[in-house]
Every structure is written in structure tokens, then in C-alpha cells.
Image 1: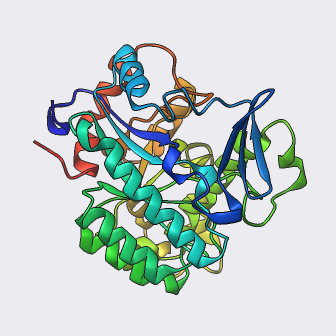
Image 2: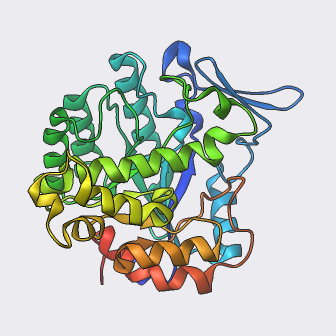
Length: 329
């Protein structure tokens, strides 16, 4: 089977690689198993998540689990805990190179079922471009993967050369948040309890990313850019009306954004994975965005992965995924 023959494609599946442990120097990552599994990234500690001996790290276990739930093809992406977007540039560069090389080697003998998105050091735009070019051109990766926060806004003019490079490579850019305060600024203190940093913090970051890309003119400046935002773009489906009204009413909105249908046209340029956890949320999202730009995702092996056979719900999005990944038959 090849990707073009796949009946079900999962574009939201993170991986943890043994070869990357310690690749960011003192920042780790470090994995230990004492009373319970502990994954350390800088001063951030994730406890109780089994990485080693699970589909996160074991390719054979991943493939067997994919078969069990009906996923034919999966694109593996960096673990959001290890973006390292705020550490020293040299260490981030080192980590991303090690990560991408190890991932390429890991999937090499399973190209019929596994692809990859590249990790990039976004604190150094020049090197991020170089690594994107290397990962796509030499390693055969299907796209690139970044967080929502790395010290500059997504609409910062310094990002334009990066976007131009991604368009030139003709691959998608996937945007997925990291938990607050891993290696960057802390968020609202209330996010530090009950896993709110990932339960609602991710949704806030994703919604902000969508607004920034549209209001900030990124999509207008780069008409060939394909960006996919995780988890249905956070609260985009719910907040659509308010977002669209702001484009017409708020004083910062220029004439091009105020024009009839302009906001919707830009929103319909964006891609979203449908890992939103409820049928009602998905229907709300579908009413606002381009249904031809929805793709299937699982957060595979994560706490919120669907545990049932997903063939029926994934199949309607396969043609969209093939288009996003430039793999249409």
C-alpha cells in the first residue's frame, strides 16, 4: 500500500524518539521510569505517561495499533513538549537535526504506512528554512511542524521569508500548540491545574493563531501557503461569528478585510484536523470553514485518542488529506 492508495489517513500523530533523548543538552529531553514514568523537558516534568514500550516510541506497536483501529497511513509529527522554540538557537538546531534524522530512519522501512513532518527551530528563521529544505528535499518529509508561540507573532514580517520557503517547497505547514511554560513564557496561572494548559490552553492558542493568520495578512501575502491548524482551530467554529464581525467593524481592519466575503474567503483557505471530540463541535466547525480542507487526526496513543475503529469517520476526509499532502492519485 502507498499513501495514494490509503483509505484512511491520520495527520495528527506525535512521536517520541529514543535517539533524541539528551539531544538538547541540559534541557533534555530525559525519560526515566522509577515509581512512574517521568518525561523531563527543561524544568517541565510530565508524569505518568508511558512513552517507552508504547506506540509513541515503538514502531511495531504503532503499526499494530493503527491496524487495530483502521488507520492505513499516518504522518508522524514532533511531540509538542519538545519543540524547544525558546531555548538557545544552537541547541534547538542540534535537537531538530537529530530528531528529523532519527525520524527519517525510523520510518524508512515503513514508507507504505508512515510519513513525517519536520521539527524546526523557529527562534532562528534562517536555520528553520534550511532545515525545512533539508527535511523535505533530502529526507522526503511531507511537511513541517511548528508551535503557536516562539517569541514572535505568526504575522511578524520576519516570518515572511519562512512562509515563502514553505510555498517554494510545496508542502503544508502544520501548527499545533505546546503547553504553556515548557521552555517559554508562562500562561495564565490557572492553566497550571487540572491540565487546563492542554484542555483549554491549546484551544485558546489555536483560535488566536487562526485570527492572527487572517487579520495579520499572512494568507493575503502568501496565497500559495497551506496551513493546517490542530483540533479544529480551537474555538474557531464557536467564535466564527464574532471573528467575522470584528473583520468588518474593528478599527484595525483594513478595506481588504472589510470587503464583503473577505473574511470567509481567507478562513476557507485554512486547513483543520477534525480531532474535536464531539459531533456537535464538528458540525459547528463545518458550518464555518471549508469542508474540503478538513482532515482526520487522532493524537494517536495520546490520552484523547479515539479507542474504536475509525474507518467510517476517517474515510470521508481521505481525499482532502491526499490533496494537503500533495499525494493525490
